[in-house]
Image (tube, rainbow, N blue to C red; front, top):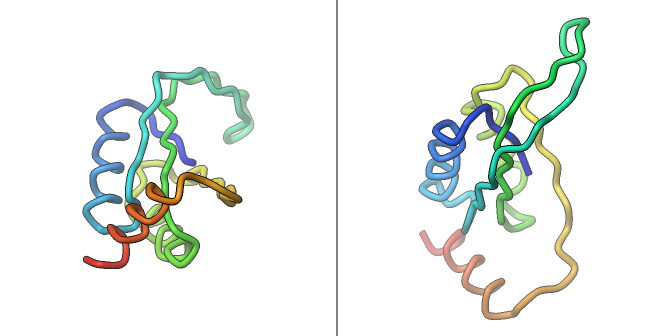
Length: 100
């Protein structure tokens, strides 16, 4: 999961991740309000959440890509393991990321 400042930035990053085969799918949420400390102040900003579906073998490359291509100086990137899922979906995702 990561966040972007707006829908346009989210769509650019999502498309780039899928095109690079670092993600099989990126879901872009409706805007949310985020409250966080930044440079000595408490910020309240609207952001868009991206849920990135990737494979464990692609995580390190995904981290590097986000660090290089994200608009934020310190992009959020949280990784949650998938413990189970629809086998057909998981296989479809794996095929996209590995058979390019």
